[in-house]
Image (cartoon, helix red, strand yellow):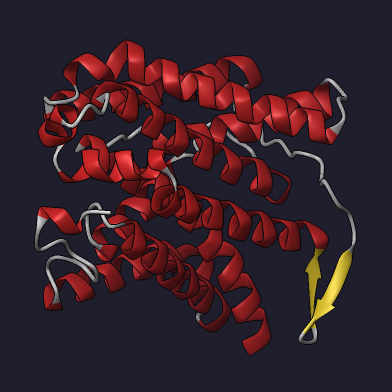
Length: 290
């Protein structure tokens, strides 16, 4: 049982980390909450189903097309609907919620309300610590690890990362230093959409695809971001694994745990916030952001 909890917790936490880090990046840099964020996760999952299953394309080609298409959709939604009103926080919430509902209705129109399944990229199983783990789940964990390492390297080792962090700390000063703030915000939105797309692509073969599949991850990553500390990428990463392991523990240890996992994960968030209202890695000063 312990081995199963460890393996499943790492996989679930890794997927949540991809989604939460992108969500946290948007909040940290643009100071906005994007309620349509997990719709990109849904769109890429449906993309894999469409290109790999319905159209019969090579899985690698289907992955590339889904990733690029979803990232472009993310960039277009930001540029067309959010960019001009991003400083009006309530309006952004309403617009992104409306966009999420539009994406959901588009999936219903295109695919119906049926439960669908994407083909597995790598069939078969391996035995780890006495637990049978599918190669698809190993692929998920490997991809998550590589992508998160790339995000860390981007933010800490590149000029683009320095510009993103500078914009997060103070957009006005960043602009005075010659940084194109509007372009950095657009790039950040593209990175966040791509992270959500990667999460949707790798988990699509392990999920039942349906038009409301974006709602539960949205609730979870909002809890994760608040638990980790708003705007803290490190906090979101750690909190993602905490929530992931809590969900897996509930499923393994409690009767009807599959129905209680979300509620108990949120309860853990509430308890931590009662003790530490700013979250695990809450930002005391603006220069600590990201």
